[in-house]
Length: 407
Image (cartoon, rainbow, N blue to C red; front, side, top):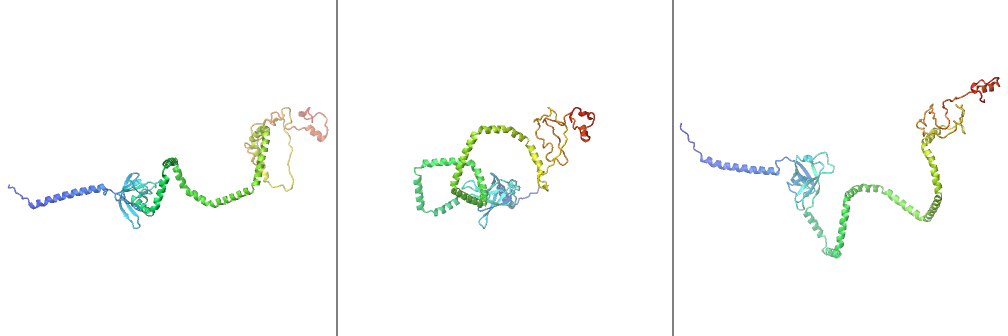
């Protein structure tokens, strides 16, 4: 077989090499651009948030950092100047950090130094909201750091209004006043430093006082008419005291004399009064122990106060005679004061025991006992009753239990 020889086209070789080089350069440029975009975060998903501020500041540029507690949470994507003079700062927030930022977060435009670049600082509130920052949220800036040009502008405006001659006079007077007084000024500064060091621990309490001061002042404002009335009455009282100073002096002299006389009386009778109080101690202790019974007796008489009055004037009393269960026996019925146990008013349900109810009979050691074993209870003198009804009866008494006893 005979081999076929293909001849290479010189035109295709001249076109292929430049095209390959162009594609290589394009690929390198694309890689560089892609790397730069990835480095700038253009390929990273972001959440747009807007901050409304009175001004953006001199050195607030796109790609400025957005920080919270020193941690970067996003960056500034663009700055828009509004017609009303304010600035709308558009933020590109990191979606992975968004759940850590509360919706009621505060915003400050801060800078590291006076001449440094500015950044957006997020300040967590004392009471964070339950909701987190969301897409499209609009926040208001609380504070913008003052730039050095603002200071120079205000200083220039101040210097334009100051008279150089008067300023020279003031500086000369200050120089004369401070000359030779460096030691005194140093002592004053040292005392002032000591004063500030003393008051610094009390600054939280001072802040609290300033916070509650408006409420307190409002309360005083509401009570101002009453306070003025009190002051007016105080003035009148003071005037009355001045007008009656002679009578007041006489009253004070009388009080002093009474105090001296009382001191003499109490001093002379100190021991008898002490003995009297000591003798009254057992009585007061007994009354204190039985005060429940006294209260029970008074409470038991309370219903009679509410009863209807008697239809006729006068005092109505009811009484009855009952037979005793046992005659007096000597010596076991001699009276004694030996009852013990304290008050039993509450134990027996008194004073409200209810109708048709009798409290239990309390037996105490008072010298007699109607329930003593062997008591004969009521004894009827039948022979005496017969003689009273029918006259004397012949023969011995018919009541054998009364044999040898009179009546």
